[in-house]
Length: 354
Image (cartoon, rainbow, N blue to C red; front, top):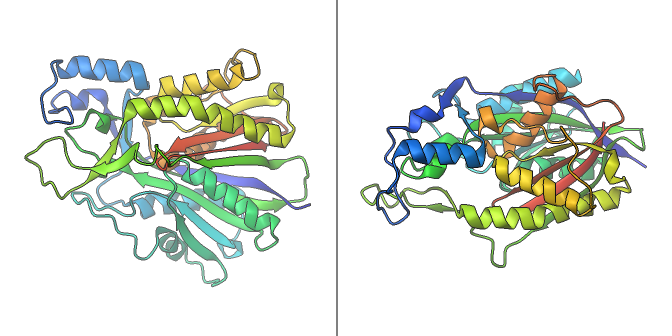
């Protein structure tokens, strides 16, 4: 039976560091355009306690999403020590396309995956490049698709990228603008002969009957702004309740499929959306097995990098594998779970053995 394994990772962390203090002069508004009764210092302090974010990264003006995706892809290819011409697929997860600084219109023609293939200089026409729009779980879903291609015998090596420049689609009058950031992460998923290594199982779900528009494109909270321009918006409380209710179950479905015991799970690489939410998800996941959360099981990067959507999980994975997060490492043979939740509303999880 053919299996698939991540043989290389790479990430690009943008160079512009934006601390919470940068928002002290912001004019935040309620969704009806009214002013908050609290001052910005109070708003930011509460924001920090809930999300855990103290700073985030923004891409330089000259870089678009496909650019930072290319940078991460280069690193993953180098880490895997492969020839780019060997790639059968390039799968690029994003949500807004290429957005130039100062504009709000996304550019997705040609696809961002095609742009990365062009930048990599790949001549092989049998290397198929396409984008995936799946909300924040897009990179994990791309890895699941890569595994499917490999198991079907139509691919041997796939490049999967998650990249986003969310700083360019936020409403500066919305407090949620402080959550979002830019970044890119990538990996090479390749065929392996090892039967008990790599991707062991997965689970994916879409909740759309009532939840489809928990994340949506909406007008600025400032009624004086151009009402035709749309920004990323969300019902934060609804998403929080949805995530802590449903993500643990999806993680359990994936783990049950794998046949792996809960005490074998050494790491959970979860989408860096909100520190308190992630902690609650993991706590509820372990509660399903009636055991406490093991110490150090959940590495975090949101404190310094913010929420870069599809890029958070591959970036976090790369940072841990490269020894760039203090007191966090994975050893050969250890089991981890990748999990995410986001616009759609989509949820997914992968059980993986290193």
